[in-house]
Length: 75
Image (cartoon, rainbow, N blue to C red; front, side, top):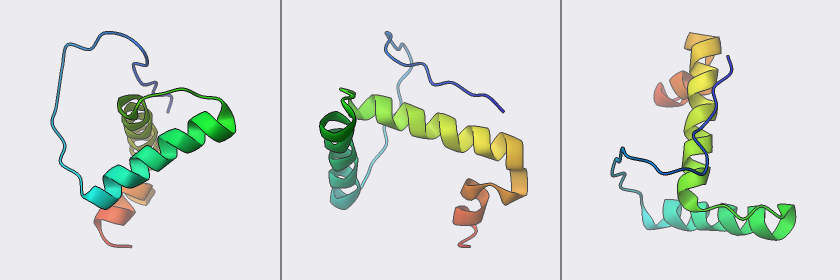
């Protein structure tokens, strides 16, 4: 299934997600790796939208075998 994130545009909808300090550091590290090693200047929101698009596409196409279902089930 093809699912594309919204990318760089004005977003009217908002959610609040609480993360641990470690998760926030991991997200920031990913942002810096994308910039330093891959030449991609993106913000954390963009990374999150991309990740959501990937995991939802996987759920849509693989269902019970998707990484989201497996992780939520602890497998």
